[in-house]
Image (tube, rainbow, N blue to C red; front, side, top):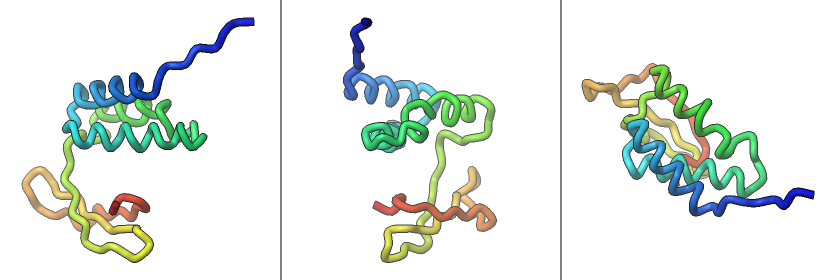
Length: 107
């Protein structure tokens, strides 16, 4: 029977941060994305973990679907930790038609 080998979390985390930075994300954003994906794996939610790095993040950045450098403005935060955010476009204008609601983004 083949012996299972595991890559330490720290090695995966460092790899992911470096790859995301090479894709254009600022270092702090790369660390946040890495932390979120790693936590999903550590909690057993493999479908929302590290396996999303290439198809959801890197491929979409390469295809121009995701902008690796964004600025968000929190416009409303509720007691349950959810928030409503506006994306700031490249000209610095608020794009009010692009409103997202996300849980856990207001830590």
